[in-house]
Image 1 (cartoon, rainbow over the protein chains, first blue to last red):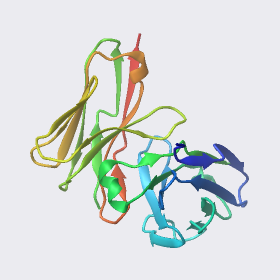
Image 2: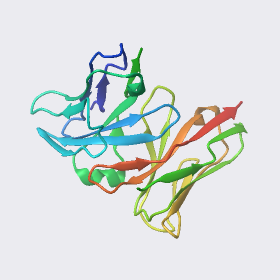
Image 3: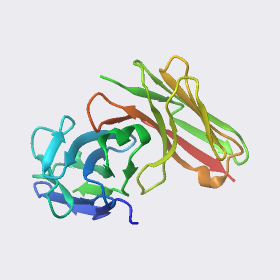
Length: 116
Length: 111
């Protein structure tokens, strides 16, 4: 019973390139959450998706960032025209119900994005 | 907006010592969660608390849900080197799917 799988673990991009981060939720989970962790900081909520729907994107920067969770395949967090300030660890979590936040999500191991 | 403040920011202790850390908020939380993050990994849930005054243990870890519902405490007894990591408190934010995290307490244990 695999946990939340994220890839790649490490991603290096030059300024102006695109970054695509993938998240496969735990089996049977249809709710996915993306969080960002800047160095020396806690995790900050970005977006909550259900299959084919964005439920809450209140933590997502207005420009350059987008997320999707298609009917088939992993959830994708896409960052266009990356800048140095996008360098961070990006974590994905999944649940079978949104109220699972009260029980604590299971997080993946994250993707560490470095923009050079 | 809602914020969680953790203290201390970091701790350097000797193996075998007990550890205490806390988390405070300006607003009431109905759930308190404690996570541990090791280098290069995602946070792992340690303890969840649901009732004011509740005291819950997980091995050498004990966490308490403050009576005012605006704070929580985590204690680690007889620390060992593998306790090293960053400990985060978290609670449900204002919108669906949203967990709010503190900035963490970084624990270093000297053998």
